[in-house]
Image 1: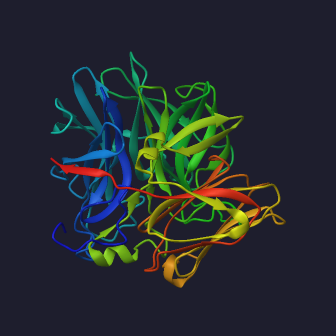
Image 2: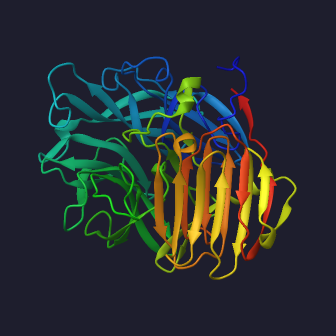
Amino acid sequence: MRALPEDPDRPVYHLSPLAGTLADPNGLVQIGDTYHIMHLNNPLACETAERTACVWAHWTTRDFVAYRREPVALYPDAPFDRDGVYSGSALARGRKLYLFYTGNVRHHGDFDYVHAGREQNVVRAASSDGVQFAEKRLLMTNDDFPANMTQHVRDPQMIDRGSDALMLLGARTDADTGCVLVYRTEDLEHFSLVNTVSTPEKFGYMWECPDLAELGGRSFLLCCPQGIAHEERRYQNEHQCGYFALEGDLASDARVGAFEQWDYGFDFYAARTLKSSDGRVLLVGWLGMAEASYGSTPSARNGWDQVLAMPRELELVGSRIYQRPLAELAGLRGREVAIDGAQGFRAQARRFRMELLPRAGSPVRVCLREDAELAYDSEKRELSLVMGEVCGAGRDVRRLHLDELAKLEIYVDGSVLEVFANDGYATMTSRLFGCSERTAVDAFDGTGSFCQMGSFVISEA
């Protein structure tokens, strides 16, 4: 892969796999001044149609601009994880960094792989240097979970509480109802079930990738519900990704409020948080939707596929969580060019940031490459992303309700599009294809700015 010519679809300020497919972010943790970002990687996925096992890829960074590609953190090299080291989390304790993950085992035979035919084991690995992980320990099997669970119980997320820790597991019951199992541990080896969190009425059949965020003195349960009915402006993707406001104690009497989705684009899933020592809560998501009709993208023809979204800073504003691009990424911006909305704007660029500041009531229309359009209709109060055959590669249209548009921040990076509306009130994230570098903004009432974006500095271990 390193010897191939430069791929114009590969992003330069988003993390992508060297080879194969990328999936869920995992192991997000800061130790000292170093951030660790891991993710699922199936190195052989673009080489064969056969099922192959995934590993955990591993990056470290101190500033979110210069990254080091570390050795693979986890391989499927034990009987209890032979078919893939699935999603999980990291917990630093003492002088060790622990990874908790799902060890996947898929048996051969005539199985539905929901009630029979698979194992989803909770496994722990340890490292003394934060790079080389060993000491794998099988902690729990499907036999240890409540009797009313299917074999879909996975994605352990560790919540450090000082004297003890909680482990959240996404689960699917025999009644095909999604929930989160909450376990408590004092020694990171023995676990006791202390709560099951769900909604009063069924909300999907499976809740993947659970996490907990604390913002503004409030708690929020993150998860990815599967099996939600699609609506015109909500829940439009194959599976959803978002959060519930949480009331009560997660380990005893927690109750969840209404579900809010993180993103209104085509390709944002499996988001989890990274807690920074400066008090910020960052969100890292996967730009992929594996079970969607467009899940495999044109990038796969070049030997790689899928991307991590830019880390986002979270802030609670009223009862809503806002998402804003990570502040450190401003260091990648080039010279800014002012935009006079009355004149419209044209540019040729494949990696840029553009900010539009329309005055109240002004419609906005941005045309990207061959046949993608991002537009705000002030009469319908709707922001839409319409993808054509070339740019969408199977994607069509996504819409969200927006009473007014005061700010539109657009990032394009190779085959990645990230849109932030009204300072992060809402976002739209998608892959974006096509050979053209054209960007055109119709005349509008307002101002803006445009700049090219530089690339990450990536070093190899």
